[in-house]
Length: 167
Image (cartoon, rainbow, N blue to C red; front, side):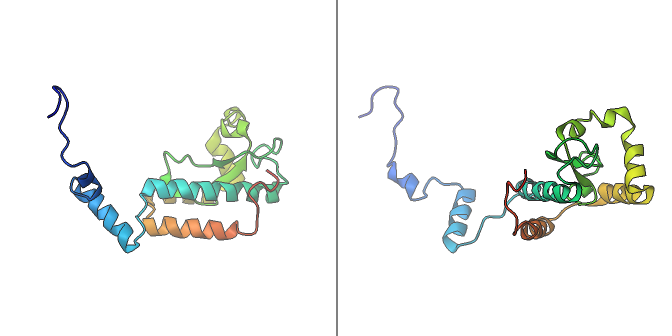
């Protein structure tokens, strides 16, 4: 007999055997049983790629500019800075020509507020390359295969370095 107000449970052990599982949960369990790795979502792949890519950009900037910001050449490198913003041009998010290593003040726009951003970068990288990045950025979409390939590519570039090397 159950007390008044309590819910009756029917064999709590059945949940363990999969009786009350949804079809999605059954597929996930079956894939794990077969040894199939679950596919990562595109946002998760982008997050993993950004972690590897931004580290590579910062190490590249350290080697290029002796650890100083590639925008103002004054402060030490702290972040990876996009020339064309990711929100407007998502196709060049992981393009090495669109990203430079920058200090915190340049990343938040303290340096860039003094001059128009687009004119500065057109003069810095050239109007042809700037227009090419804009074209690619508007039209390109990353696939799962491209993202996984880029993750492996940048991991291989970072293979001989340590994470905190000079950071």
